[in-house]
Amino acid sequence: MVLPSRVGSDGVRAVMMIEVEGRAADQVIRRLHGFPEVRALHTTNGRWDAVAELETADLESFDAILRRVRLIDGIVATETSLLLATRKGAAPAG
Image 1 (cartoon, helix red, strand yellow):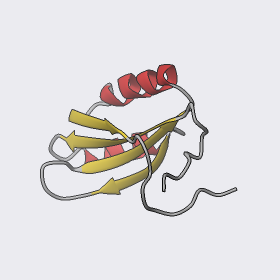
Image 2 (cartoon, helix red, strand yellow; image 1 turned 135 degrees about the vertical axis):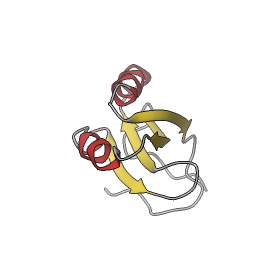
Image 3 (cartoon, helix red, strand yellow; image 1 turned 45 degrees about the horizontal axis):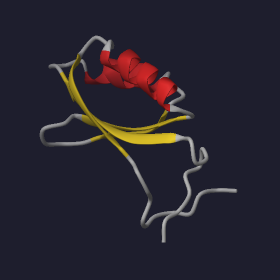
Image 4 (cartoon, one colour; image 1 turned 90 degrees about the horizontal axis):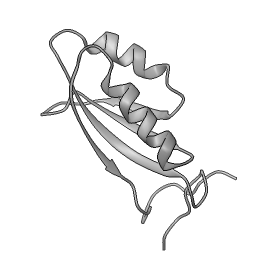
């Protein structure tokens, strides 16, 4: 069973893996908190320092948030994957 996206059939959801340089993690996390498109933010271990769950209404807005995030001082690299369908998880509210 495929669960619908909370933003509708035209919405865009993604997971962005973020690598942060040196001691900039707290600064980067604070900046990411300011973006309404960042629905959840997780710190992690391994190759990536943080994982951001992104959600926008359309691809144009998605492109804009990618550019804005990549301009944050302290971000070294990102890798983003679009979420195509939810196969298992919490049912959307509403």
